Length: 110
Image (cartoon, rainbow, N blue to C red):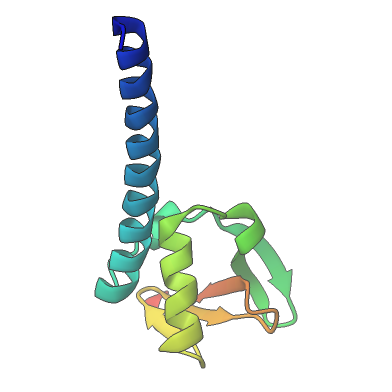
C-alpha cells in the first residue's frame, strides 16, 4: 500500500469516528440534561405573546431543534410535570400540541 492510500484511509476513519463522536456527544448532552434536570431556561429563545390572561412567553420545537436545553425541558414537561411546573420566577406548561412550551411569571415573584 502506498503512502497516499494509507493517509486517505486514515482520513476516512477519522471522519467516521468524528461523526460518531458528535452523535454521542449530542445524545449525552440532551439525555444528561433531562436526567439531572440541568437545563438552563435562559438558553431557550422565548417569544412574548399576549393571551386572554395577559402576557406570556412561548418557545416551540421548530425554532429550538437541536437545543439540548429546550429538548430537556420539553421531555421533563411531557413525562414528569404534565400539569406544569414552577422554576422561579416562572410557571412552565406544555401546549396541547406537545411541542410548544409556555411560561408566565408567577404572581408570587412580582
